[in-house]
Image (cartoon, rainbow, N blue to C red):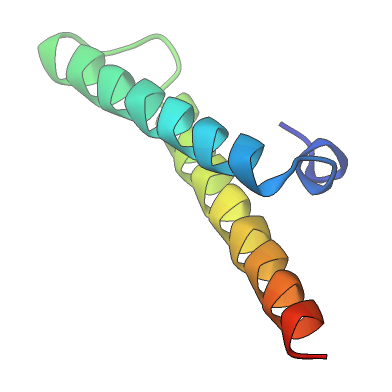
Length: 70
């Protein structure tokens, strides 16, 4: 998922996408534990995507908090 796509998501969509990506990561790790997956870099990519989503979620929350206090 590209950063431009992530920036276009709302707070609810970000929360849903994080949950979806975490579930995907668990499945990838499980599949890799049982037998080596074809491309283990997918695990790293999934972790980085989750981190990007969490970063954007915190930025959206801070922006919402800043507008509420004004």
